Amino acid sequence: MNIEEVKKAIAGFSPQEVLAFVSQSFPGKVIFSTSFGWEDQVITDMIFSANLPIKVFTLDTGRMFTETYYTWNRTLERYQKPIDAFYPDKEKLQEMVSKKGPSSFYDSVENRKECCGIRKVEPLNRALAGYDVWITGIRADQSANREDMHWVEWDAAHNLIKVHPLFFWTLNEVKSYVNDKNVPYNPLHDKGFPSIGCQPCTRAVQPGEDFRAGRWWWEDASKKECGLHDVSAHEEVFKP
Figure (cartoon, rainbow, N blue to C red):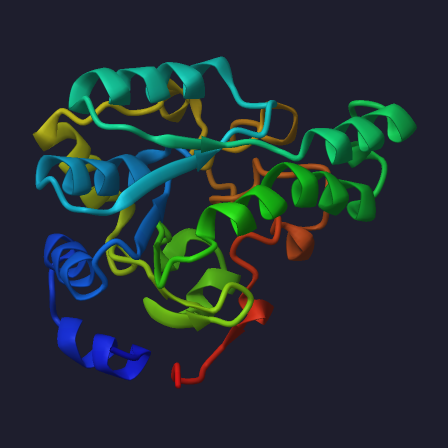
């Protein structure tokens, strides 16, 4: 099944129906990445509650918040399902920190992207290898760049179909699901963190600030992506 067929088949589906369809259509080839934020916890609940054959994984960068590890543990306790952890390459990480120190990402955009590349992008590439469909928790209103994305797209960088089941949901719909289903969620959300990443690179946002203002808060807004969901890497083409 190619991306055009997937788009037609799931048009009008609910997120739960989307997840069920892709897991059945690509058996053993569907994977979901979680960072334990609101949206990811909703999708995790949908996958685990329905016992869908979708692999769930996370990227442990080594710089995560204590609250994020707490949410990870609560999720394991609640669902009794595995969440695979992927870590940075030890030698690459040691070389970077030895040469530039543990906080080089504050010095330049290039250094920050290097850190993201080692701690997140390279482990992600390993995690996605061999899969046909990547599920994410991206919503359309999370940033200006992401509004240019589509809820089903071809990810040329990883040679797979990328699906965002919650793409058309509002934040209020996400919160309502969490409350209604009593889904474990990250306590940082109650402290002004709409978007949660590595601890040194994330802060709470102030009323009226952009959703991602707390991510890499010392940089210009136009540079605030780590490479995991780089729109420029996506091509509006159908899989052959």
